[in-house]
Image 1 (cartoon, helix red, strand yellow):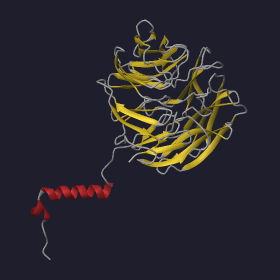
Image 2 (cartoon, helix red, strand yellow; image 1 turned 180 degrees about the vertical axis):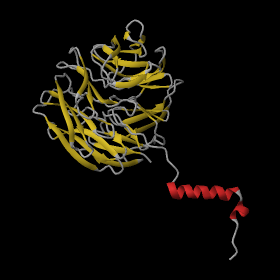
Image 3 (cartoon, one colour; image 1 turned 60 degrees about the vertical axis):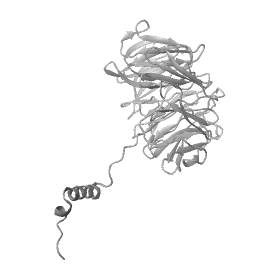
Image 4 (cartoon, rainbow, N blue to C red; image 1 turned 180 degrees about the horizontal axis):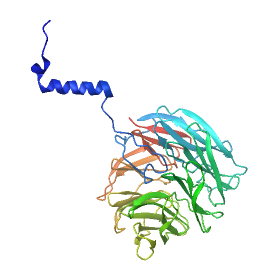
Amino acid sequence: MPRVNYMKLYGPRFELFCGLLFTCLVFGSPPQTRAENWPQWRGPRGDGTSLEKGIVTEWDKTKNVVWVTEIPGDGYSSPIVWEDKIFVTTALGDGHDRALVRIDAKTGKVLWTKTLITSSDLEHLNKENGYASSTSATDGKAVYSSFYASGRTHIFANDFDGNTLWHADPLISKTEHGYTYTPILAGDKLIVSVDQLADSAEIAFDTKTGKIAWRIEGNNISCSHVPPLVINSGGREQVVTCGSNVTRGVDPKTGEVIWSCAGPTNYCVAGLVFGDNKVLTSGGYPERHSFAVKTDEKGDVNAKGVLWHQKKGTTYVPSPIYDNGYFYSVTDGGVTYCYDAATGDIKWQQRIPGHFRTSLVLTEGNLHTTNDEGVTTIFKATPDRYTEVAKNNLDEFIYPSPAVSNGKLYIRTKKNLYCIGK
């Protein structure tokens, strides 16, 4: 047979085809966008924002449900995701056994359930709390969890097979409404803010050993449950904490207090949000107050650091979100607000039916908020006006906030974990 000169016949197109074929044969299919892990409370940045693409906006108990699995025991902690691994905490049986659960993200199969500690007593609870309400955190090497047990605060580090790497019980624990102290990661430090009536402190643990790197004593006057927030501001990394009428920025490496100010109030639960070198705090009791404070100052910033104060629209439990110069919040009673982050001026407000405990999540310009009955309302993150995108009903009781990873939403209900996606 005569030899065919394909270069002469097809020219540069053949050369391009050969190059693409060689790339696919040697390196596999073209690279896909890397999935973003959701490694701790409110995701990789601790602020409820996701960079994932292709998140569905319509679902119900069967539509766009990839899988659903029953979670053993009972808990209000939110799921965390690391690649194909999902972790949640739970209380087994009558609540004395506090456990960690690993679930396969691809299939929903429960791979193991490990009781980390058994409490000799059951702490007093608010009717809206449970015995496993603190969300875990992971750095891809270990899973870090926080529980009350037998009168003390307990912090665990476990490997991905459930084996305990280290355990610390640094504080006597006494709360009014139950234990909800969620640890977060800042480099090689695990930081937990335990604002309570007994030993009150902010503590940083070495993630490898569990040894205390630094500790800031609290004032023991009230019980707040705000997870710390790691930010970069003023040319340095900070961890911001809030509770018992004090908000402060701390160097996560040394424990040095960079700045502090009074407020917003004694009892705080809603998570912190950060943008444009300011952090928004929300306090719920005895009065509801929000204020925006500058995070690039030093020392006592009460006079120069508090930019604005707002009582209208302050949430007690649901955490707000920041996006492109604006803060968004949904109050416990279901009123949605958009604030100008620079001034605190309200751009719009809109009532959404239901009672709310979950925190806002932002995906592809859409804000997700879920009420207690399992109805998720999705609306646009825009200061122009309230624009609803969809309403989706799982018709199950929901307190935990969703996780976003692998192009999916992971939503925990009272008994089940749903994987929502295409």
